[in-house]
Length: 72
Image 1 (spheres, helix red, strand yellow):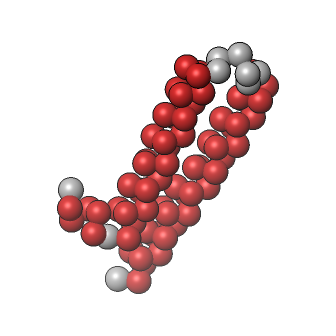
Image 2 (tube, helix red, strand yellow):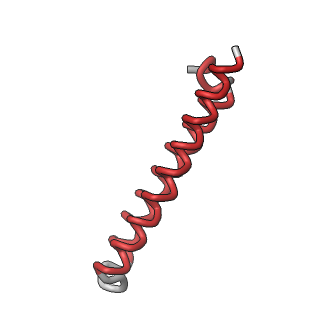
């Protein structure tokens, strides 16, 4: 595991996964603290926007990894 995190790409993947976990934890806290304050449309927009952000993040990390492979 340590070897995986020592590479730039592994670190970026770990940061992305941590971000997803924090987002999911925030949604759980929001559902517990104030379940009626946010509507389905707002929640859907928030989740779709975050999904697009994470998708772009992981695609860019994958492209970075492929560029490193080509240089070798």
